[in-house]
Image (cartoon, rainbow, N blue to C red; front, side, top):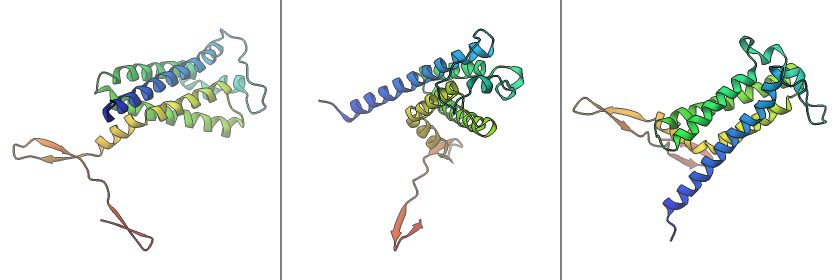
Amino acid sequence: MRTASDVETKANAHQHALLLGACCSALATLVPVALYQTGVLSRLPDPPMSVFDSERITMSKAAHPLGIPDALLGLASFGATLTLAILARRHRTARPLLAAKIVLDASAAAFNAGRQVFSFGKLCSWCTGTAISVGVMAYAGRTTIHDTFSESVAIGRKTASGTYQIVEVPPIQTRVDSATIHWK
């Protein structure tokens, strides 16, 4: 007989596998870009759609912060995310770091995609693949992110011995009355 705990464990295992797969996918989409930015590849192919211009975008000044190709920075960054994802499975202390890293990765991917559209009027197809992978990472890590930020909202209460005890903040209770929400 399956228990609720078994179902939750299986769901967590699926989320973790999805997170690892999405992180590996993000790394894989950055490899050709890194090879192109470092001169190993002479071309960076795009799908035959006018919305993509990967070569121009990846060789732009914006794609080389501090003179470093951004794909190399991305490979290092997602390597760190993958390491945290592996560690978080067994070490509880890695979970808040993983949650923060996923939020940071998602924010950077969204910023990068927006910058491409507004600065170039085009997209890098490889970077778009990375951004989609990061979106899947955020989806797969949503429980870790939620749990981490819920814990960070907790408040402390000083006990008689002078130590602090963590007390969960109760959820906001609402009462709907004539289409008006009253906060208690």
